[in-house]
Image 1 (cartoon, rainbow, N blue to C red):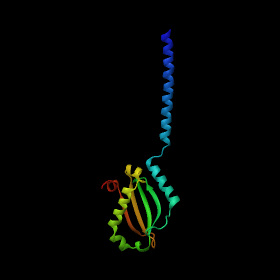
Image 2 (tube, rainbow, N blue to C red; image 1 turned 180 degrees about the horizontal axis):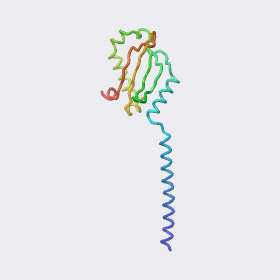
Image 3 (spheres, rainbow, N blue to C red; image 1 turned 60 degrees about the horizontal axis):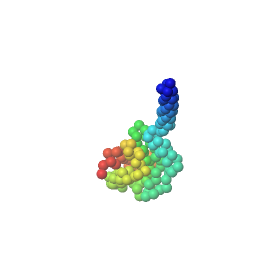
Image 4 (cartoon, rainbow, N blue to C red; image 1 turned 90 degrees about the vertical axis):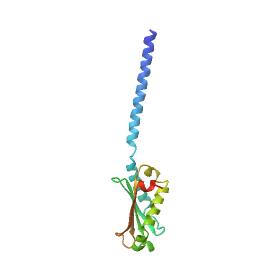
Length: 150
C-alpha cells in the first residue's frame, strides 16, 4: 500500500515537472520569436538615427544626411555631404587614403558599433558634394577584414 501511494505521489510530481518544463519551453520559444534578428535591429536603429538626428549640423565641413542599413550585404551606409573647402574633387582625390584610414580608425575604435562589428557587419561611407548633391566625391566600404586587423 505504501509503495502504491508513493508511486502516485511520484507520478504527480513527474506530471507537475513536465507541465513546468512544457511551460518553460513554450515561454522560451515565445521570447525568442519576439526578439528581432541582428539585421532587423540594425535596420531599425539606422532608421531611428536618421529620423532623430539627421541631417546633423555641419562639423568639419561634413553633415550626415542619413544612415541606412542594407540587409542584403549586412552593411550600414552613412550618407554625408561635404561643404566648404572639402567640397572639392581634387582635395578629396589627393586625400582618399587618409580619409579612408581615418574612417577605418573611427570604426575600429567605436564602442557603439561593437555588437555590429561582432556580427561581422560592414560600413559604407558615401560623401556627396554640397554644391552638386548628385555628385559622389568619395565612397568606401569598411569590412571586418579592415577593422579587425591592426
